[in-house]
Image (cartoon, one colour):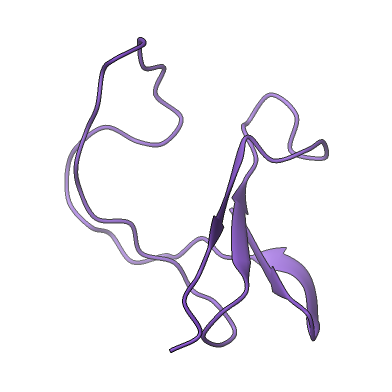
Length: 71
């Protein structure tokens, strides 16, 4: 996971904090399958965006991007 905003270049957003047991983001999910849970990230400030880079190619384009609220 990489966080960035208009003032800050992309940086690691993963956290050392554990959030319990369960499936990880790197789990392969089948179409229609879903999970719920908590995701904890360390980011520089409110806002910006977080991109998820799969373990297959962390230097390529993110698999998905989440825009974070500014407030």
